[in-house]
Image (cartoon, rainbow, N blue to C red; front, top):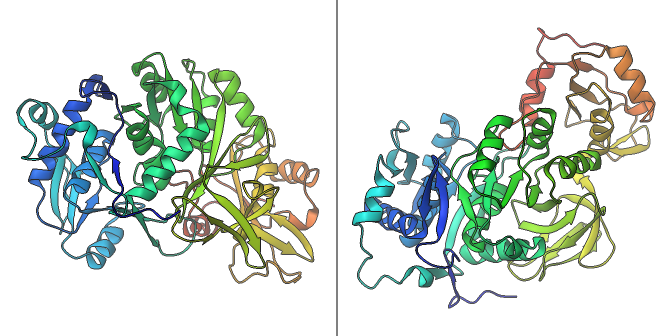
Length: 467
């Protein structure tokens, strides 16, 4: 369905200006205060085409997103804030303004604090609407207005820009919320462990709160005690947006956790036994979200109930010799998905992993996702990953020379024991050579493992391989 340029979609869908919008540093923030901060920042922003939003503060990020929309500036959402990445963006988007937390700056960039000290409270008290500015429930933007450019943060390659219109973002989040039954949660508190510059965090934390009247928690807790405290602080109704890695660490800790109404998980394959343990511990259903940076959210499933994914309403899939294509509603044309998928209908499917994860060794096929599942299901393994050390190794041509490597965190196991347990689960042709034991895997904030970091760790002579 084509999104007409005359269509306008609201910034937020809370019930009234005095409704609770967020919790920040233990203090409530109303919709009125949030919108006043948005207007305040919009006044302070210089005339630029792009706003690089580096705010770590969740509320500051949301204010920056709203202010950029109000000024018709495009928010740039990088996968990290390393000097190399910032230099690359400054060259690619000349004249950008950088939105930061109070007191932060980045060399060579024109920086503006999204929420300067006292800015939220001051804005709420002193900033009137602009002449002719609509009321909060009428504040809306054209569906075809470019809202953001997100950058892929996958395991390989140079980050690629993904242009997102406001209509694409809103309709994706509305569809996912409807599929998940978010409306039944009312004004529940939302706590997320994922970065909001990532598409998953942008859609399933910030925009899910904005578009479904949820109460946003302003922090990004990572440690179990901090997650528990954050959940406790948002009231009796709660949902947690997280990743398999964060969820595994949370369940391995003995910190007392309050019951939840919903758990959302994405960014990596989730073992069914981990989903079952999470539902039992947190007294809530766990749903996974499937999507990618190119399309946004596409499908959902309750992991403990079914292996089948169900597309968000309005989306459909088809297959040809190239692979699986997604189209419909908020998508601009068709997008070829980078996954191996078995369709059960044009809206339901079984996911078999990334196309790039398929390996073919001596004529035998497997997927890295399947191998990782078996590795991480071994008692004593805290974390582990298979990968192909050379991208030139054969994957699908029937060649027999390829060898997989594995990095594993398993301090109580020997190489002999681990190899024997793997041999019980997988064909010996897929046993890793080398198998290297490490103290920790180099996961990024979303739990992904950049290929370059894996190769550096594999080549580290200070941690000799076992086996």
